[in-house]
Every structure is written in C-alpha cells, then in structure tokens.
Image (cartoon, rainbow, N blue to C red; front, side, top):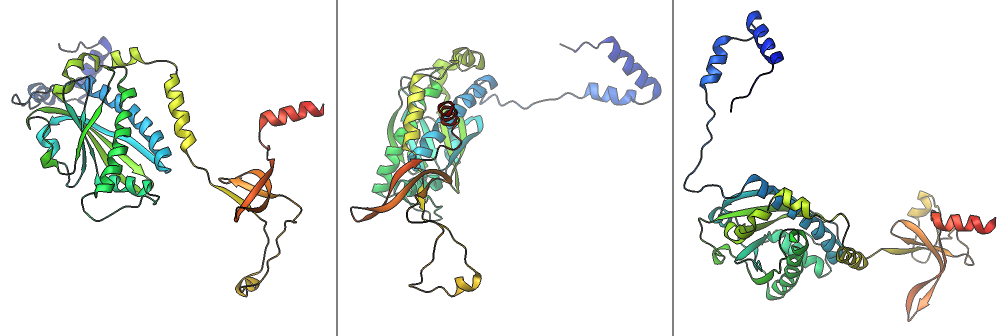
Length: 339
C-alpha cells in the first residue's frame, strides 16, 4: 500500500517544486525505478527474522552461563558473545570448517536429529593447557589431538553441552546427549548438504587466546518448535526472579574459583648504591618488628593479620586478626558497642 502524505508534507513538496529545490524529472525517475531483491526459489528462506532473533537471545544467555562456568573450571578470564545468527545450507557450513577442528555431534533430545558444535583448534588446545595447569597459551602447530587430550576435551564438551538446557528452557526442555567427537569435517554428515541450517557463531576469549565456537542447528530438527521460536513467546515465558537452581549453580561455580593469598613480611627502602652492592648473605632490615603481626593479602587487598611460622616442614601463617576496615556492618556494630 502506498504511503499517505500529510498536509504539511504536501505543502513542503509544493514549495520545494516552486522554488526549484526539487527537480520534477528526478521525481519521475525515482518513481520509475523499482527496488528488486533477488530471490532464489531453489532454496527459499525457512527461518523468519523473528526466529533468528530468538535464537540469538537463547545463545546470548548460553554465553553468560558459559562465561561463568569456564571462568571457574579453567581458573582464567573467559568472555564469549554471539557474533552472528544466520541461515545457510549445511554444505556452506561444512565447507567453512577448518581441519582439524573439534566437531561435537550432539543428540538434541527430545527433538529428532542432531546438531553440531564446532570448536576451533586454538580454543581446544587452550582448554587442554589450562586443565593441565598451564597458562592456556596459543599453539601455532597444526596437529590432531592425542587420546589423552581427546578424553579431556570430551569431558569438557559434555559439561558445556549441558549449559544449553537452561537457555532453551522457555522453548523446550532439552536433554542433549553427546554422540561422538570428530576432528575432520568430512566425517560429519548429519543431514543432506542442501538442507537448511541455523548457524550461531560465538567469539570466545580465554586469557589471551581468541577463537570461535559454531553451533549448527538443522532446520529439520527445530521445525516442530518453530512456533515457539518467537520473541513474543520467549518474553512471555521469562521468569522475573532467578530460580533456585540458577542460584545454586552460580554459587557452586563461584566456590571453585581460586584466590591468591600472600603475606608481607615487611618493607624498607634502600639506595641504588646499596641495591647494586647486595650480595648473598647480606641482611636487609625491614620496618616491621618481630612482635608485630604481618599483613596477609587476598588478591591486592589487606584482609588479615597474622604471624609467620612452620607447619609440617613448610612455611605457614597463623591468622590472628581480621581486617574489618571498610566493612559497614562491622563498623556500625562497633560504633553501637562503644556508645
């Protein structure tokens, strides 16, 4: 239907024509020109924009859960986010996969069919390095995963896969199951090459290592629930309060996190000349007396005081006092006791 102009718009157009600001011929040419968008009838679009938008919302929530879980599991800074959600053919997806890659084939129960989670090798090796106590550094070498590495990856993928359950809960109660992991895309043919899929691309950063996670969901798998993949249905199902399971999961992941604790024996200042002249056996006098407790830092913050000693042939610190500075409840109660 053509747009109806208001009286003000009509008056403005007439004034522009009268003053010569708008050329009549230009208007005629614009009317004659028609905007045509190419449409391929051989592969019509099967997913509406609203359905793709809902998939993005679902996987935005998945990324938040993934960040929390991996930060505790790998003891490292982790950030992931959705880069794109698009519709394409399975052939286009499989052709874009690098070899080797970590390709997890997942049964998308209770829906019929499977999905593919593609993990870039850089991310896979970083996972393994962190799990084994390393710094999660970037590996430039291109090689397949060893049996031990494959076992570690499989265990981690199972836990990552379970994180899909909560984000999809407003649409369907999933029970995903890991079928197998392949490292060559030629061995992964879950559907016909011409079938339509939704491809969700995530960017993930673990420390200094960056990579991608691709989640390929065939249209035929989610076809029975396409009616629920709408933003209207999604937001009508969202709970206003965090569930008990979410609270327990968050608390459990936080408890796995590790904190750096250090003890400061004391401090002093020396001249550059004294520093240059230091030798083995020299004694540096600190500002702290032996009878005074030393500072115990948690991260960069002074949290406790205590005395150094030994326990079972190892250096140890006995906590004798808690630093309550900045604790509003403690200061409020202390003020009440004094008065």
